[in-house]
Amino acid sequence: MRGRFPHVLTGVLAGLAILVSAGGARAQVAPCQTNADIWAGQGFANAISLYSLEWAPFGATEWGWETYLPLIQHELRTHCGAGTPIFASHLAAFQQTHDLAPTGLFDSATFQVFRGVWQERRSFIMARLAGECPEPPPINQLGYLVEAEEHADRLTRLLRRDVLAAYRRMAAEARAQVPEIAADPELLQIFSGFRDPEADAARCAQQGNCDGLRRAICSPHRTGTAVDLYVGRLPGSGVDSTAPASRAHMSQGAAYRWLVENAGRFGFTPYVYEPWHWEYVEPWREPSAP
Image (cartoon, rainbow, N blue to C red; front, side, top):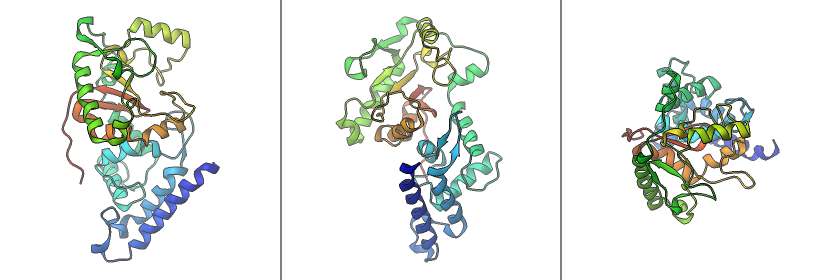
């Protein structure tokens, strides 16, 4: 916990700044601090819980919810920080829309609604809920990645051809827009694409890790539409480490944040538990943030 205190202090100071600014003229208040007279208290509470909340959204205990903040901000159509009145007001609107008490406070129940919204966008998950396990595509519908697109020393990777084309457009735009991504050729490389169902089942049996969270018996990778992208790693951890600290580190990097904001335009939707895992659905145009 010792290492978390500076982050908590930062959140507290941010909340105090909001409270102080609330006394000024509304015309002088920064955009993210608008409506501080109504939502400053909730912003202050969110600033603290962002790092201090003890909860278990996926079974194991986690501290804080910063890992999920980029996706939540994107869903709420705001770039304002978790400790601001505007974030709290947008969160309250989301809660009201989904039949929750519009408190403007982040909590586990609200997160589960977010999680449900994100899961519903994964067509593979909706098929699984209907009791279906999609068949893999014919081999002639799969295309090979080139060496520069593959991360680490693994077997040759394949993707469905339309998904591979979408990935290439997305990666090219990311490198053109984000200096950090352009400077690191590893970022957005693929370390897992199409996985043969029989080989995947054998790996599950051998490693004993097909628990439905880390790896599913019926995996979306069988469709050739799921990609595991390198978005950075915590020193000493693997590229797909599910440790809370590892996932938190990945979610704050430039690659992941760009994907959250832009991957939907290329047809990709995220799996909230794994910052590296994205699934191709279809391109969609999002409304601009308010």
